[in-house]
Image 1: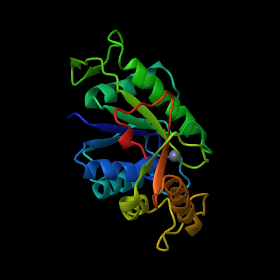
Image 2 (image 1 turned 135 degrees about the horizontal axis):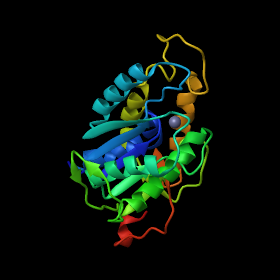
Image 3 (image 1 turned 45 degrees about the horizontal axis):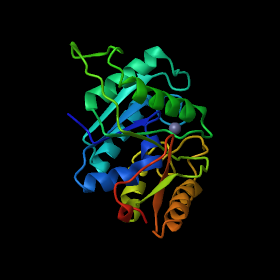
Length: 238
Ligand SMILES: [Zn+2]
């Protein structure tokens, strides 16, 4: 199945935190959107890989995703090397997205930057015909997405572009809350972590308010681009 947008995320819940409003908005516009998670988040202090698989599936239903896969890379220790790039290239060629969204340029969690670099390098390499990958016994065709953007997650990064996600903020929060073991949930026990306090949601909403305010909207999600962005029509800019 061809996707319009492929979201690459190192941990199940990164896509939800970073860009699920944008995912929801484009699905509402009829676009096909999928997520490929790199790891099962098995190093997370709370929950297990199996529970997080179920949480990711629950969130996929809330978001209305057209596909969600997990590459089962090693949480915390995967590398941006040939072995891992070939796996990500296989996904890019399989889904042939116009647009790829990847983890942040840098962040508190060191996996995020490494995954963002892995996603960026793989988007480029996927366009080289001599890089050979096989899917279901068939040699894949080269495919380079025309746009790669990186969502902003924990650390504040000045965005290059902001998407108005105002109508989708409540569903975004519901998708994040599908990760019941990771975030504040009065019915869950477990050690407290950086992201498990009730204040964490306030910070997600606060970030979204800040991004939205700067473009005259209520809620927004920001992205950075490694290249200059162009539009066909000035009226698409606000
Ligand atoms: Zn993460």
